Length: 471
Image (cartoon, rainbow, N blue to C red; front, side, top):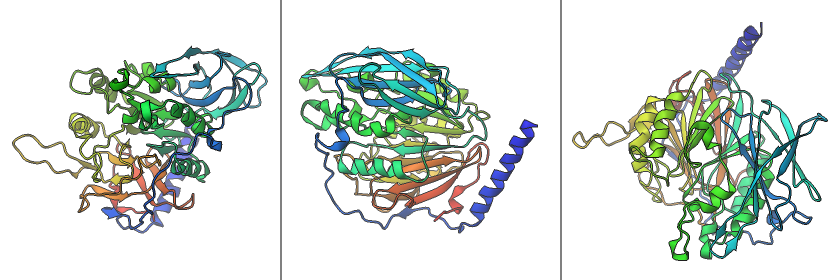
């Protein structure tokens, strides 16, 4: 009976979605360069005494609280925070909403030095064996000045499970960054977790990679990261490789501060890994780690893709910092060697969407591939391919380096929509076949879709989306 009810609800949902689509004009949005022109303004970091960087009151109170998924399935959460004066409690106390039973998890503490900076006490604690689709409250800094937050676990992975992701990249800590985060928080379609495509604090833009800017960034984003998981991708601004000041270990601040559940997907390094979250299997790759043949990242991805079960997680997404298809004159072709290495696998395994950052603007591609080329046939132009992913560049969070507003001309055939503005996106998965995607520029109201489309699953409903436009 339960199975019949689930099938019945699924059919009703399909009918509703088809009704929405029938109301949409059947016109193509492909090949559009937006006519919106953002005023040329310099991106400016907010000063360290800004309200958004305020240190919580109380001696040694926890700060920079953030959570991410702590296992492969979604039943664990990694809770992280920093105490500045002394280690304080290593424990997290947590409980289900409306439950009097409180449990405790034990974490670990780490510190690091970077040039003339010494970090606070960085705590990481994994809460395990949580129930799916359940709201939990948790408390850190147990003792004199505790702080309490909450989160909701994802639904159990499944075929027709709805779930909504937010998408942000290259955020930084400017006034524009603040607008991006505010727009995401106030969007009427609420993201349940954030897929973050790299470049967090931009501390490396300061003299000697001033790591105080890692601390301020952690306090700035806490208003979101403490309440919903952000799924981390490492970008070039996480490298912090500076041999001129004696810092030769890449990713040192990032890996000390931001944990990932990489071991749960048999990865050997925290910079590439996978998770299941609701209806999605998400693969995170590292543009700035070795990925050539026989390297650990290559071998891991080669083994990971066949493990994806589209009967359990119908949607397959990849997060990578450097875009493979990019029609801006910034970072042009920087992702090309990784594309050549892995694009055939993505087509073979029917990846639905690849999200990237790095270019400080927005772009959405058509479904194309460029896998036929070899050194003698000369077939080196992307072609339409309905088994290929859509490539979305969303490195438009608002960082101090400003917008990428110089585009290649004419617009390439593979580019469906592009605009040089700051913003965020929402991916609202309805079921195994349909997902509604919208991108929101900061200059508009929260509910305005500057670019939007339906995505159809490559395994369960592999039809061409380009004949459907939503606005």
